[in-house]
Image (cartoon, rainbow over all chains, first blue to last red; front, side, top):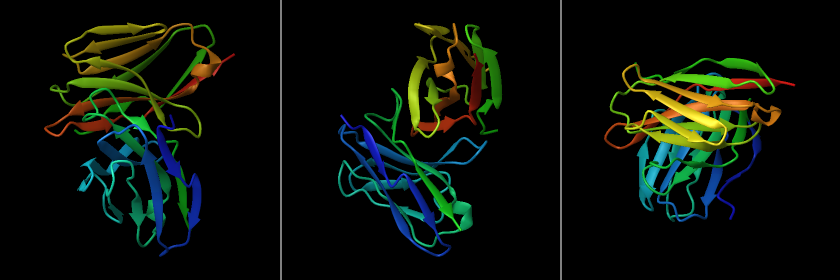
Amino acid sequence: NAGVTQTPKFRILKIGQSMTLQCAQDMNHNYMYWYRQDPGMGLKLIYYSVGAGITDKGEVPNGYNVSRSTTEDFPLRLELAAPSQTSVYFCASSYSQGTYGYTFGSGTRLTVV
Amino acid sequence: GEDVEQSLFLSVREGDSSVINCTYTDSSSTYLYWYKQEPGAGLQLLTYIFSNMDMKQDQRLTVLLNKKDKHLSLRIADTQTGDSAIYFCAEVSGGYQKVTFGTGTKLQVIP
């Protein structure tokens, strides 16, 4: 059972470049989430999805986009990378609305130079 | 405010007990959680407590909840070097079950 799989683990982008962070889960969870983690700042919610075809903004959505065409996949798109997007990105999923906690991926460390 | 607050750092000797504290924001929070993050890894759910409970014990872990003061604590008995990690508390609140994470407490266990 793989759980939540994120790729890539590390990436360096130049300012203005685009990329997609991939996230896949094999637990048939309806709810999926993208967080960013900055030092000393905890986790901030970027986007979330309550099921295939349904997405919504979190606390810090600017500069990001998401899609949810299947239950399993929830990719995060950065269109014009900026240094402020240097962070560690975590994808998570949950069976219900997170009542019994989230399952997290191992993260993608992104540096924008 | 909106922040879930934790102290940034805690250092204990191996074999001692560790107590990690958290102050949350929403008195109507239904569930409160403790997550553990080891270096280079994602967050792993350690335990959770319902808001109608005062205490929950799970092997070496004891969670205490003081709803009046909106204070949550995690006690780790007989702390081991493998317990070295960052510990996050989190609360579920709001109409759409928004989860708010604390800033994390880095636990250092000295052999």
